[in-house]
Image 1: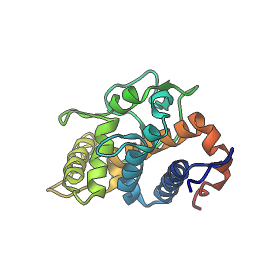
Image 2: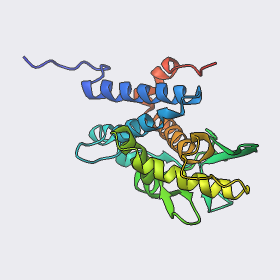
Image 3: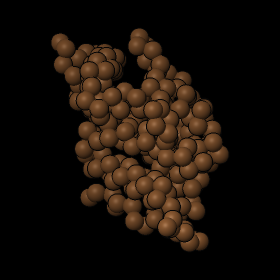
Length: 216
């Protein structure tokens, strides 16, 4: 006999969605604690939540993606070249990039199609990267093909090292924090997490307290 869902009960699909969102929060907390290698996992979870491919995303299956506003945390004015979602500092090793996990002023909400297609990283020679480009790069790495990430990191390391007169010698892959790629992926996960909190409050509002605490 088919089980009747009671008012206030969550469906199996809603429970899976919430578990995936909590996995995203847990991976983000590990990233913030210094495990930058969590970036491919963040991409895989962002994909499961939002991007449709061979299987539909959770937001699509729940019928919420079309109506959800997605946070765009890029500065409203300023540079349109370089890393647009992250902050940078300089030390003796070169640039260090980190996600801002901040929004400039009031939240800017855009439809998914604009969110995934907008420019988030622009380079002098290797072209522009959209949100979708960055997510797919890391998702391929999560699936076992890290060659594209490695090649992109080498290029970005040379580009940002050269701007300091400290070009990356040889063919070595720079540390993750010395290119904007990983920090950009973390900021995209932040944007999605806040977008879900704002647009799916009826599902996640009472679960916010259960999100993993920031590591010390």
